[in-house]
Length: 195
Image 1: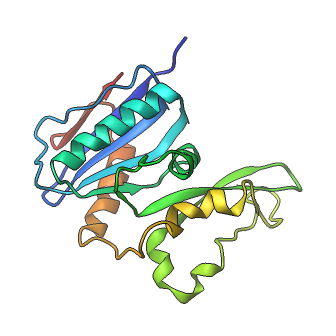
Image 2: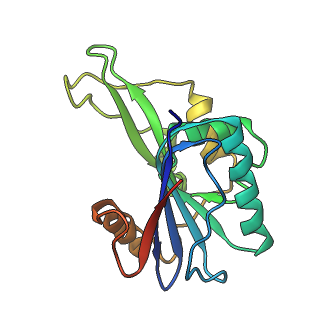
Image 3: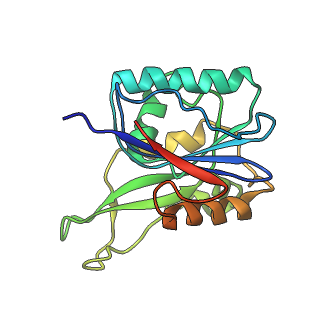
């Protein structure tokens, strides 16, 4: 059975937020968001993308090309490790969009626990950014280690200019939290769809 992808969206005064979950594969189609204002920035949340295949990559790039034709400013938030990997290896995978945050995969050697640590590209403005996010393992408190080569985890931030948080950063955090708690397909300012 082929896994599906779920899309949820929130329309705000200052931006449109689309949150994707599942697998980007042959079932993924270019989404159209009813009520989306093409003059506003477009924010894509990929925290819950688990896998991507070549057909999913092709459709993804087509989608971002359409957004670029509209001269939309595109931001990516909470990029999952599969999105980070594709961005590192596939030319124009992000279509000129700006990454605001991404998950770096960490691993505990002591208890074999996997953990994702959110890194914000805006942290590069801080001189301490070179100190990679470190955390104790939530299970055994031993130090977590990067699960991938450093270049594969952090090139996504290095390959773009330092980023200032957008003026709508607080409203974006609120919209992400709202999408996480909203029942499927509910809400006056958004919706969801499954492919």
